[in-house]
Length: 284
Image (tube, rainbow, N blue to C red; front, side, top):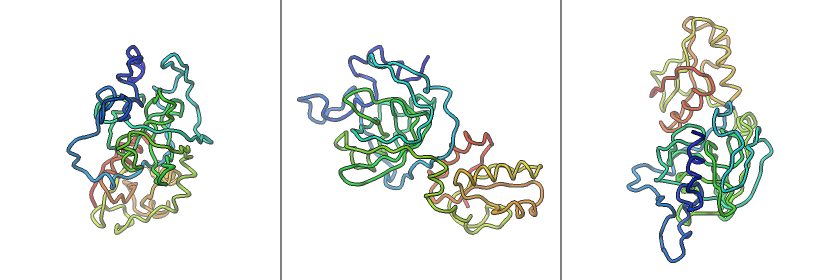
């Protein structure tokens, strides 16, 4: 099977399952109706305003979702590189109906994650989306395909749409700008120090959450991982190769701190793809 949302193109003419069909006012004469049975979440038990933006990191292209495909009689050819992409248009969102289903990347769709669907941007890639009507801005990870109707340029997760202030209307005017992970890491400022912890990477002090990425018997392997994390903008302990060497074997590499568990979990998922390491999340 190709990726999930294209699988439903057999009934796309009815717009029952495609991204970008869930704006409240699609069906004339049906006040408050959502197209195709999609809905916003009910009984929200989390503070949506505290959900952190996606963190731009350099990731390999997904094995699925990056080949040319057809939707509603139109052929789309995904970009190999997102750098330089910038567009303005209409954004929509998708929610409860798709929650937990596979995205084009193979990841499960989470309407509370900062993610989005796009017709041609590489999967994965990272973009900044700005609401042109109120100036609000978010960073999301593109991991799905769509939207295919009504000249919409991006389909946001419910959380991203809520933070932009377009969830109630269903759509909004936005600007979408692709982010280069290496540049984004620089513009976000220098990495934070690993607050309240010893140089050994000890997780017993401080506050928040941290990720232990490895405990290596070979110093060279630990140095290489530490360098990779630094290049992608993550705060790392120990702070220098010399300090890492002085700690002795096993050589431990830690990323953090992250003030919220959700931020740490998001970083953990991204870093597992980036490094292939078995990552442990710990409260500090």
